[in-house]
Amino acid sequence: MSISFLIHSLEIPLVRPFRTSFGSQSVRDVVLVEAVSEAGVSGWGECVTMAWPGYSAEYTRGAVNVMREFLIPTLMPLVVASEEGGTATPAPDSVRSALALMQGNPMAKSAIETALLDLWLKQRNLSLGEFLGATRDQVDCGVSVGISSSIEELMIEVGQYVDEGYRRIKLKVEPGWDVDALRAVREQWPEIPLQVDANQAYRRSDADHLAKFDEFDLLLIEQPLPEDDLLGHRLISSVVSTPICLDESILSVDSAESAIEFGATTIINIKPGRVGGFLAARDIHDLCVERSIPVWCGGMLETGVGRAANIALAALPGFVLPGDTSASNRYYKEDVTEPFVLVNGQLRVPTNPGIGVEPIAENLAEMSTATERIEP
Ligand code: OSB
Ligand code: MG
Image (cartoon, rainbow, N blue to C red; front, side, top):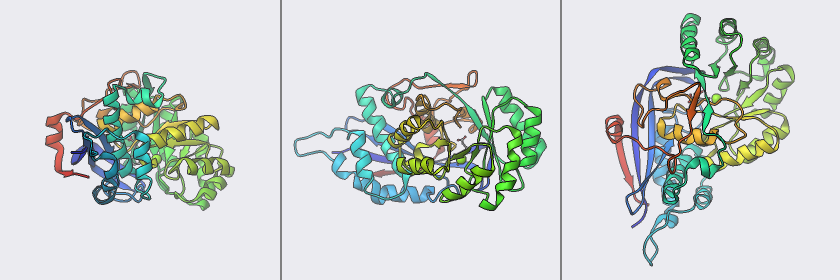
């Protein structure tokens, strides 16, 4: 006997295509990891990979493969019953250290680590928020707006989000879709907190162009240059007065500290999937609090499973800017869990044990394209 793992592959249509500088998607390819104890209790984690390696090197089919071939087998000594009898769910730190023996693949690792953490917390009747050190019971929400086919369409979409009460708007930008879009939105909503995300679409030579964004009073410019170009980000920030915020470049506590010390970033977007899990995400948060670097919680179009956990993280005290933690209906007509509903621009932090939510069995069945059982 041991803990067993189920890998659920789902396809869920997005309410509208989401276009970024690295590509467009209209269906979310989701993988949920379920860790089942001997007593039949399930823990859940979401793998936030996209279907193709456009945001980062990981992609969904590759993530499933590395989970099956390497990550889950690596956990074998931790989750297989001893001679004396039953298995205890491994402690979160031991899961993290075991997975650290494998390089890269943070999103796949995060999904597995979170499923085991959810199970461990349920067995202790502790919520993820309590475990991580959350200090709020609701979080301020922003929304990430994809690249539109026209300014008119963009204005309709942003208007809808403003009416729904989102506390901050983030526009996806790329060369050819930036200054005009920003001008239109800023003119219509002079007061709304506004920021942009380029997903690495610009180059060092675009510094003067990026400086044109300064007139729009943005909170930040997210990841203008390629992931590995820390020097470029530092150079840009000497020309542009809007703060630079890194997303893709921040892969660990050490890379966060390097980027801060090097002067490549003054704000950080924390995504558990990108950094290998919630323990690493919490450590980056702690580092940033110590260095007075504001952080906010990013998103990867999560279903309710990933969203619940992100919201617990976003309730930590260093998360001082609204996150990309939007309501379920910004992404999906029907979520796999009970929907997260925006109230007064905020989402409520789950309080049930573990991540605090479960997939609804019928929704899971309806959205599922494949289920694979992996015994370590
Ligand atoms: O760069 O923050 C990003 C979505 C997929 C991949 C990368 C990013 C995003 C978003 C959307 O901006 C955030 C969300 O609403 O989940
Ligand atoms: Mg981003």
